[in-house]
Image (cartoon, rainbow, N blue to C red; front, side, top):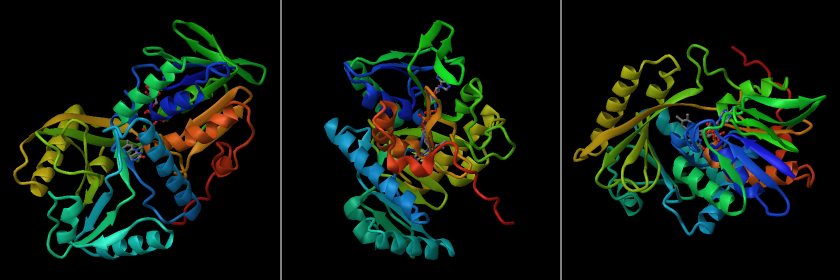
Length: 374
Ligand SMILES: Cc1cc2nc3c(=O)[nH]c(=O)nc-3n(C[C@H](O)[C@H](O)[C@H](O)COP(=O)(O)OP(=O)(O)OC[C@H]3O[C@@H](n4cnc5c(N)ncnc54)[C@H](O)[C@@H]3O)c2cc1C
C-alpha cells in the first residue's frame, strides 16, 4: 500500500512512525519546508489533560498521555519528552477559586491533581517561589515535549523502517480521479498513492480544497483570530524549572540542553498574522522581563521569538478520518499532546483495519457546533 503523508509536523511524524511497516506500507512524507519548521517546532508543547469540562475528551487526552509515556520509554527517556509534572498558581480572585475547583474536578475524574504549599513545592520545583497567599496546584502526571526534537526522532525511526522523507517538497494539489484522491502534485512531479494523509496543520484547508474537501478550522487571517500565537525561547546557563509552570502572566517550560520556552496568554492573544516583526520582538523582551520577576538572578537572553499558528478546529476537537476515497485527514489543536495517540488510532484505519470507535466523535464531517448564545 502506497501512503503519502503531507506535512512534517508532530502529526505527520507520528503517523509516519506508526505507518512505516516494511512489507505492508510504503510511506513517503512530503514537507514544504523542513520537518518541525511549522507550528510543532514553536509550540509550548505542554502534555496534559488539564481541562475537566468534557469528560469524554478528557479521557481521550489521558489516553494520549499514556501513548506519550510509551513513546518516551521506547526512546529511552529522551530530553524531548519529559514527565516531571506541571505546576500552576493563582494569586487573585476569581482565578484562585477557579484553580481550586479545577483541581477538585480533575481529582473526581481520577486525574493526578493536588493543592500544595510553597514549601512542599520545593521538593518538585526547587527554584520556584510563588508569592505569599497563592493557591498552588501540582499535576504530577503532566509533562512537556520539545516539538522539533520529537519530530526529528520520530522521523528518524520512520526512515529506519523504510519511510522516505522529502523536505522542501510542497504538495501543490491533490490528484483526483472521479471521487477518488490518487496522489499529490509536487514541483518535483506527481506522487501516486493509495491513500494521501493530510497532516498539513493550519494549511490543510488550502490543500484539501484542491479535492473539493473542506475543514472547519478557525481562520488565522481573520482580524483578532485566536489561531495565531507567540512563544519565545530564552537561553540561561541552566534551566531553572523541571516541567511546565503556569503563573499569572507567564507560562514556562524547560528546553532540552538548557533554556526556557515562554508564553503568556495576553501577548499570545494580541498576536495575529499582521503583527510586525518589531512588535513580536518587543513581546519577546516583555516575556524575558516577566521571567526575571520570577527568577531575579536569571542571566538570559532571548534566542528566538516565534509567531506560530494553531490548526484550531472551530469546536476545539480533533478532525480525524476519511474525507474522500483515498484521502484521510488528521488535523487538531493540542496536537503535541495528542499526536502519538492519534497516530496509533488512525494508523489502523489508514491501513484498512476497520473503523476505530475512539475516533467516532472526531470525524471531519461532523455537524458544526450550535452557535454560542450571546
Ligand atoms: C502558541 C501555541 C502554543 C501551543 N501549546 C500547546 C500545548 O501546550 N500543548 C499541545 O498539545 N499543543 C499546543 N499547541 C498546539 C500544537 O502545537 C499543534 O496542534 C501542533 O503542533 C500541530 O501539529 P501539526 O503537525 O498538525 O502541524 P505543524 O507542526 O504546523 O506541521 C504541519 C507541517 O505541514 C507542512 N505543510 C503545510 N502545507 C504543506 C503542503 N501543501 N505540502 C507540504 N507540506 C506542507 C508545514 O510546513 C508543517 O511543517 C500550541 C500551539 C501554539 C500556536
